[in-house]
Length: 230
Ligand SMILES: [Zn+2]
Image (cartoon, rainbow, N blue to C red; front, side, top):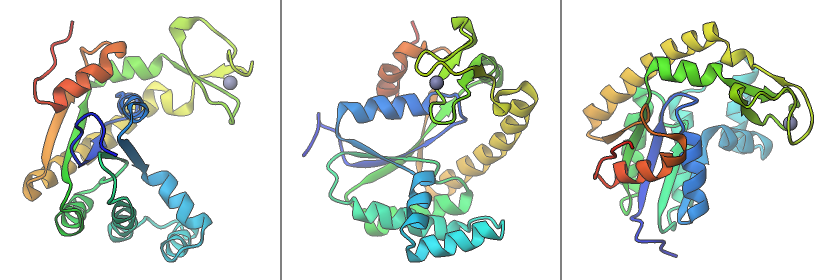
């Protein structure tokens, strides 16, 4: 079923945690016509169902080895082909992540997914804005809940389950700085590969965008009208 004139397109989100890509993906899916693939859940599903890819994946994980790009792309490619009938947008989160994955993704798109356009949306956020945002985060210590709060809410316990709120190790300033360095390297590689392959990259600069306007601004950026922050 077609939704609100959405064209058939595969869009890969790229951006650091805290840049708002999860929020945008969630709102867009609620509006209908948009489905998404998280590579993390796809890998877990393959392992659980003991598929050919899943078995190979598990062996590598057990040995502490990295997942080769070709295996990741094969799994994503199979999933995309299985969802070829979708009349709308398909979002990818967590893929492509390397230059080689960009090349393999582009190849899958032009070979097996010709009805779909494809592009990357880069969620661009300045390091200082991101650090401020992440340092403000508190997370519920209950592993089944993990609801995220802001320090500015002045809460010490979770409103949903009553467990203590803590700052995650990942949100400590030194750890954030390390993560940003790693991310910057990935970003350079990814952008260079997109240029080589001729994959369009849309840049969504979220620095000045108020959280509540995030989704509307995202849609404007996609439609090429640009977004003026108010
Ligand atoms: Zn909780």
